[in-house]
Length: 245
Image (cartoon, rainbow, N blue to C red):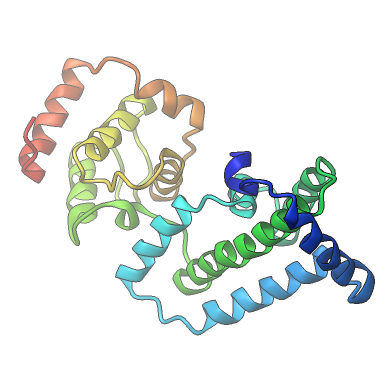
């Protein structure tokens, strides 16, 4: 992360304020970071539980979650991409990263800034995380990332007609790279919301088509020159979605 953004400018007078605050937390209240984080997690859960999440809010929350840029979100989103860890393990990973970072600094102001950033970032990040998890109760799909109410339905029907997928949306073609470039074409032409990162698009594709698209394949695919067949598909999609191509 950007250290300047994380800690800001150092001022000597902050040490005067910082040490009493450290003593208050560590000596008087004896409140450790894990306990403070637990309170923020509970607060985020309670706040998320009161949200009535509409389709519009869900899409806005997904974009806000993607764009989060704080110490906690940086590490939480990183570990959240792994499907081999439960929530508690993800939280522990973030705590471990916090402790590693805290050992790099020996002045009180930076430690207090790190702590504040970590806890505030955790509450902001987890509020969106819980709101999306508890209200959608399903994995992200094409309808979540495509612009327009019927865009995903139109596109799915097109893929079925072209025998790219079967009636259950299972992928039928072997050339994943070509399939990936079709979706990239839609993103470049604002049919797939360009605010979503490639990792989110990959996740939506995996859930929609019941298959895996690793990041390496995705990254390489979008760099390859399109084939004549793909150009013909782009032209059909252009007519379907009124894209200038």
